Length: 247
Length: 122
Image (tube, rainbow over all chains, first blue to last red; front, side):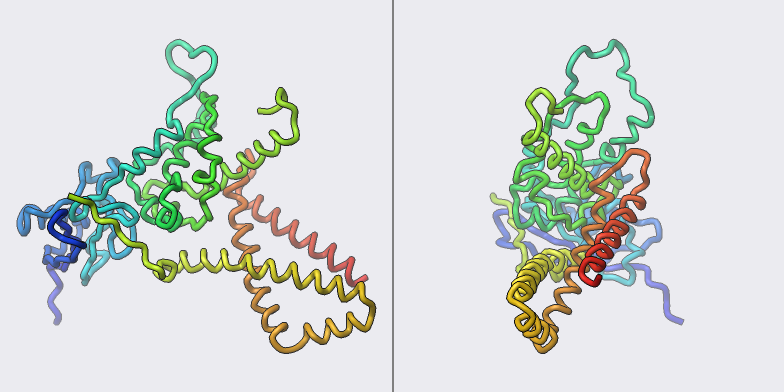
């Protein structure tokens, strides 16, 4: 009888800035345990095999959005991706695609951090703000709730070929977060100049992989297509209606 | 110290089935354009009289035109189906489930096709 495998090989990208001209893969044998996520395997490497390995992580429960990596070619949260699902292995762990690699599995997401405030991801309220709570019905909240679940993990940017080929694209998460406020009953903000620009929703060709990759069910692709219709209707109104009747 | 810029492979669209499907859908626009040209050729042949029309039908029925049209039809169907699949995502109608929007589009397609068929065949 064949003995049950107790270890799995992890092929991990290594890149030391200033020393390596390009990343290489390094293999490690880690224990194969039912309850171990890819992140647990990386922590095992860091604690017991090779302390020089660099990667980001924090909460271990799919909330912080820090541990996004490319696992066997797909963008995944390494805390929510289990080693047993890749048995007998090897399992390849690479940095998120479409971002510059700072070191090993750590990528530079400053491009997103520059783009995010452009969509004004906060409540813009005209008129008086009510004292105390700003009330909203459950139905009004349902309008935008799924878009508010984004944890900025960047899996959607990593999955998006448009972002790979046109880095000026605002990107799935930023647009979905703009829509999160557009659809909020308490918001009166106008984000059209950014969202309806050539780098905004119109750059999206609806590959749909952002929604497939999203670990929180945000559906950025849906948000983008929906805003395309909103932007098109608004542009038509601008063209047809007198200034006072637009809205 | 500099970050490593990950290159994008020329064949990125072959790495995943969903990427390939997307590229095929983008390519379908070429075949949609061909059908427009083909329709204009048909109208022109009809305008030139019965003989020209017979020539057009004979030209359409054989060789590369037939093959091209079969391929074009497949691409146009891919275009239509993926476009309709997008519709419920773009059109969120309050109190109307997404599948109703989808079925509505297919019904509109069927009705318009029937109307065109009636116009041509009556």
